[in-house]
Length: 266
Image (cartoon, rainbow, N blue to C red; front, side, top):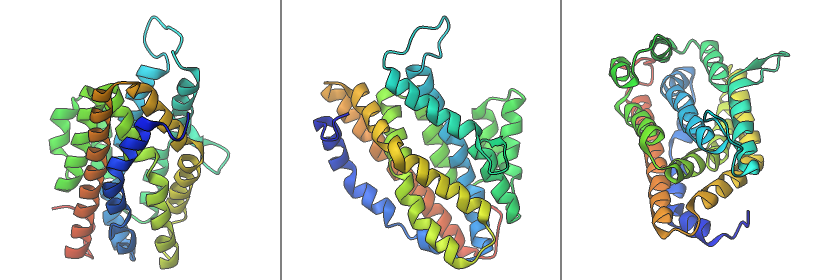
């Protein structure tokens, strides 16, 4: 993809102020104790989980997942999506085996005795065949976490594919390396016993900061095409994704500030 694509340039120019706001959020310096990290992880784990719904929607569209099968229209995009799925669902676990990034995150939570009960209740319910809309209200979480996941699920299930791609690119793949790069030094300097969590963060910085961001931009460009309407819709979707993340971070920081020794939601 030409990095100076006019459509992508216009989109990125429009979202730049929100992106800067997200990257200057106080959350990146707020986590200095195990108790505060527990609060963070017990909420952020839902964002780790719901990422896969965006990705699977894109895989359905771009990587030939329908039956009967037909060849993908763009092989490079299909490979890109499938590579991300491979990494997210069965990455190397540093022990000679494989693990999903979600499972890696759960293990990191256990390292600091963060509660996994609510997210595991969600996963168990979904595996039992319960509908998300019925199950989600029963899960204890912050209001900002609820809003973040509701936004992701609504877009994954009902959004136009170029909107999903824009949210995936600018709310996840493109910005995660910059977000996590701000968090890693604080975590390391705190001296917290969180090697597994740091590995999770650094793995995403490595994977997403390499070629994934550029390929995600190409996906957005291809799906927008020459349509002004799609460009406007994709821009709004990217802005909404970033704003949703800001509100997620706001809720966690507020929780940390109000209850620095608490590790559970009321």
